Length: 156
Ligand SMILES: [Zn+2]
Image (cartoon, rainbow, N blue to C red; front, side, top):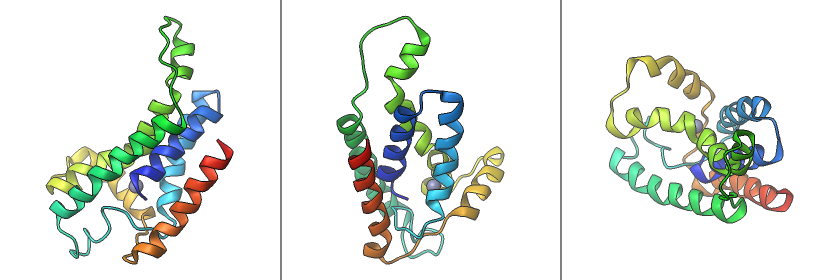
């Protein structure tokens, strides 16, 4: 799915569930499950060779920037200074939640955009790929993500 979808889902879960022990695995599991929904994203077409790495990268940049903007807008982190670790974790939940929501895609980025995949990432990327179901039809592929975005905005 789009980085917008994964980042907002991660921020949403991290801010809704107090315990990181619960939210962290849930955020990661949700990434794979969301990717199983037929969808369109910047990487769609890379595997089949219908999109160049350059074009995928150029589409990924606005996706990531909008994702960051929406996370900050919809889940503003509390940047007050504190030395209490549990409070820091809670205050910054939208940021680490969004990052974890995107992590499986970040780990795949060297392969997708540079054609280089570190050997140690291969099993994890193969696991990611086994869930991934992208479709070339942009409107159909964005519809479930628009619905997700609306649900997140309405229930945050
Ligand atoms: Zn993914």
